[in-house]
Image 1 (cartoon, rainbow, N blue to C red):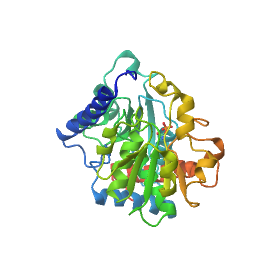
Image 2: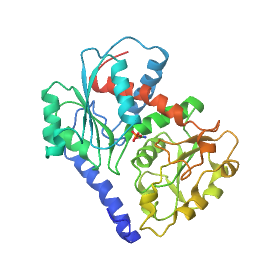
Image 3: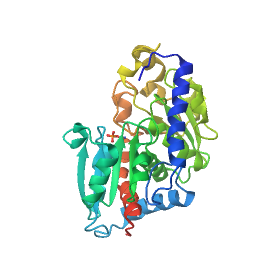
Image 4: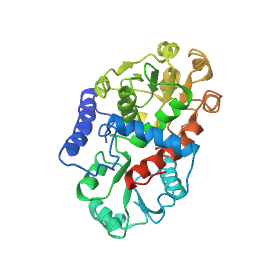
Length: 330
Ligand code: CP
């Protein structure tokens, strides 16, 4: 993708990416046990998943998914999502198999649908998929009858990340209703920002995106009802209950009218900036973090940081997602 294009083209591409994934969704009805995106979840689904994640953490029972099979189909690199789905599946008694884009017949040109059908024919009862193209999980769900779980698709959504973020916030705050969340950084490329904005606004949180126009086009305000945009990080900090920092890849800034130094000056979360926020503010990051870019190590490792708690909660939330997909009960 070209990052040197003008803001209008970028906005159009952003809109197209979101719209094409939405259109793909409208044309079929997938297994109700799939998790394709936040938009497809009912309020009851959301509450059940969050409740089940908490229930399992408090009272783990043995092996509700014994002799069940989960395939992990990863076309993109992942540490947290892949490992936590694997650990979640195994902790429930299921077996897992990993297929990655390298070292599989995907390298020989096998299509997404053929790969999915092959896994299903071998006995996979659920496929967890990460793919660089928006809508890839929806394509798989249209062709297969087993549940499909979206582990991140292009610039579209990362629903399990949003659910675990929400779950983590609720470990620290009684409700999301009225909570003020500030999402900072590369919103343009972030499926985490999109899923979080959709989920958090559904739960009546106030979501504000913060970043420079090159990484946060004005159209991002239309992602979910009530989302606001600000360019001024320092001014937004006193009104934030939760700060969610997003990864900024240095290579993505090349070609934009934005230098790394300018980005760090205006948007890096430092201890000095953190002091502008309320004393009990929560600092989150979906990972992987680029220390020294979007935040300093001091902040990443501070008492306010929930980064490793998010990772830990990811296993609980993904257990709930797999139980829903495979019809197991704790
Ligand atoms: N947050 C997240 O998706 O991390 P991974 O890319 O390591 O899975």
